Length: 499
Image 1 (cartoon, rainbow, N blue to C red):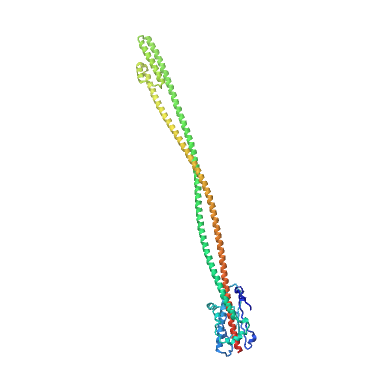
Image 2: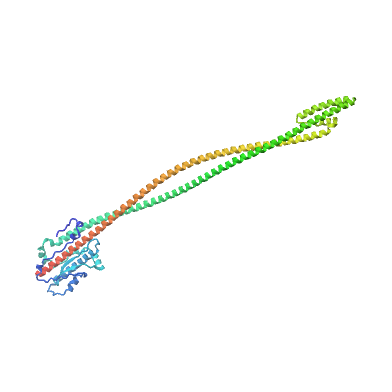
């Protein structure tokens, strides 16, 4: 049977198992061969198997019996370990049956065991306790009958010399174990590196999430600021509308007040003019009455002069005085009817008939004084009206200044709104860029995490394959050791038979 020793990991499970070859049946003519297939029966250790068989024992020496029992023990332990290893295999491999043949030393019977049932936990613990040591100790077993069987072993074909095969398998196992240890160490380093990268990526993801949270907070703050600015703009527009409405109402009220004041002043001026006209007409009527009285007095004086010649001189003087007084009266009427009291007193002394008229003249003077007072009051009202007009002008100037300030504020608001719109656009562009960068970084991190997860999965699969290959190698070594022990026991039995 040919096996590939170069790369044992490339061989299949069937090619790696070394099946022992037994001696032909014509060599066992002196013995009675009995086969008992144990189907659905748990594995019986060899030391119990030969006790359960009731056969006639030929006489043998003590040394041969001890050697055969030692070999039987080693073979039983190897079979138990092989069965336990086959139970530990993964579910990917198909269920296979192991047939092991062993010749009992006491009964000289060849048994065939078929393993199909699971073993106990104690058997697995015994298997893991000593993994490969029995194979290495199998060479150092002291066999007193080895010298007797050397010639017979040398006569066997080269396929059945398993000691060299076991040595090569042990060397290959050591080399493969070293390779797998190195590979496992590299894989562990790779796993640690990938785990560190994964932790770094997780930390970067956390930092990016924190930055995203801060950006969201800034966006919310800017949104609140935008809402406040919009509310301020709405309130400002409403206040502007209110101011415009108030200005319109104020202009309308000012126009109404101006019209009412103008109407009142016109009415007052018209009433004053009417009063002055009536007073002037009264003065003219009084002057005409006085002229008529003077003419009547002149007529009476002329008559009196005609009647009394003695009094002509006096009358002439009186006439001269009367003429002078008339001139003075005319002058006084022309100069706002301001007469002198002393002249009026002298004139009263001279003209007793005019005493009654002096009272009327004083009354007129009082009326003139009252008119002067009224004129002063009107002048004061005119001054007040001019002051009111000045105040209105000042108020209009202040309104114009306020309107100019409002226009300036509106221009500033428009400029600030334009700046705010540009800033908002820039901020939106920056936020979009930051969001795109963060999304790219997150996508890269996710891709890196996926790659790391894939690499970790590959590493775990490689570790699983390494463990499977180690298990296969150990099973091959155990089968080889078992075959060696079986062949040595067969050789000793055949030597005993030939002797």
